[in-house]
Image 1 (spheres, helix red, strand yellow):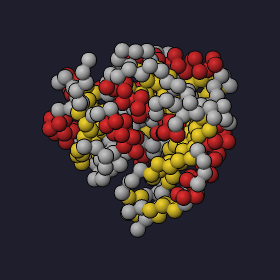
Image 2 (tube, rainbow, N blue to C red):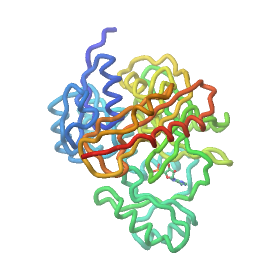
Image 3 (cartoon, rainbow, N blue to C red):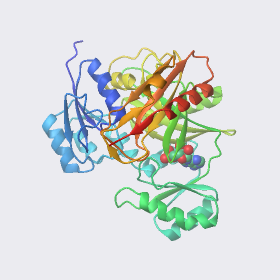
Image 4 (cartoon, rainbow, N blue to C red):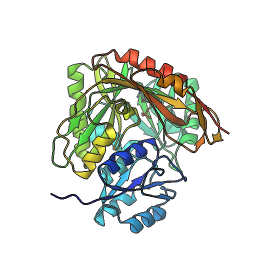
Length: 392
Ligand code: AMP
């Protein structure tokens, strides 16, 4: 078989997109990186770029018509994904599929598919569209419960209702954090988990569905802080998580990597949510934990190239480097101190501006595959804390 260079339109040009561009270019392909601001991390490396509002359907149509890509690859959620169905009808390939990208935009679609259609184990949940309905839902589900706008990003508008005094506040907060004019929330029973994991799952055109070793992670403000791999999971729980991952990826369809999130509890494993693309917690694979990092796996899977196996080579951890203020032309201190350490590396994303909590880089550490990942995670976090982000 001969391989022709493929043109890929990458929708979203953040740090995950940047690593994907590297993986795709190493395999000889051509990437047009798209995002809503100039000089985004993936744009700096791609052969071409476009700056548009990806929530604007007409603008998206314009980019697709101009480039006529072999593959349309979403890297973020905030895209007018309804258009994807039309692109598929026109003969384009959407990664992993229009259905997957569209369902995962909205918590309701994915949760109903998981819980009602497939019978996966999830937290109990109800939806609400009014303050009154919300109050009822909270009482039916019981407190504590977790409230999330159906459409939002990175934990925006999300809160925990512990007592009746929190109810009105939680509704207000969810309304403010909703994306666009879509005002609906999900109220979920609080899952008393001892850990949350990401199961990176790879679906292939001509091969089996593959699973990476579980990744442990810690979230704050709905955003990931540290992740580490492999995370030890009881064999039964791991099997159950793999079965759930296989079922839901099959129901959504298409090829590529998926970040599937589960809660681990003393009563077993609960499906939480998924994204049909490389996952931020999966940046730990940049620490050399596997024979292929998550971007290389995604690249191969979307190009229809073989992945003979996924081998866990090392234990690793990743910890985020965050900005604290608004600014431009960021610069960093403490980098040398971090790089003095053995088996340690850093990725700085070259984002052109900073704002509070914006992710500017990660510190990556690795050790023997049998190493204690809790210690590794702590090491990564301590090193990341030494890196100062400054701007002008
Ligand atoms: P999500 O945006 O759904 O990924 O939620 C962000 C984070 O909130 C998760 O990673 C958990 O730490 C926490 N969380 C979400 N849903 C629940 C739940 N039902 N019970 C307990 N914690 C939750």
